Image 1 (cartoon, one colour):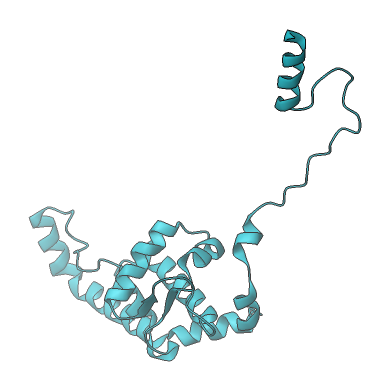
Image 2 (cartoon, rainbow, N blue to C red; image 1 turned 135 degrees about the vertical axis):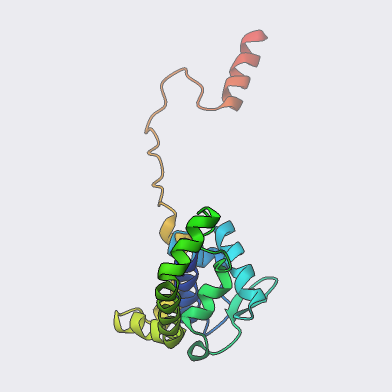
Length: 185
């Protein structure tokens, strides 16, 4: 079993969603801002999660995603299997003779290993991950109140205006136009 960054990001985004969905659906743009993940990449992940029946989507203003089931009913394995392409054989890059040799000598080892990893991932629920975050001090109310757009947008201080304009120099395009018009008369 190969768990890629895709699976890890999906688990992280689902944990974020489970923490913050109490009051309303959670927009992917807010998850994107908090997680530092591209919005288009999250859209791909959540499309796969929706097809797997793990999340529901709501369109329109105030729309976003919510869990389709309670967090304790969703395992980490469910999330990873929804987004990872685990059908591909790890031996596919080997020649036919090499693949058969590896499979004959150690195939049972890797099959057993993959089964144990999958068993472990099925034993960890999304609620377990939420509980870990809550123990770290992330509160659901504070998480809901976060404003990621304001947090990521730098505050711009206004430019200081000069106290006095230089004598004889127009201070705007309109003043320049008026000065030119006066000179032509």
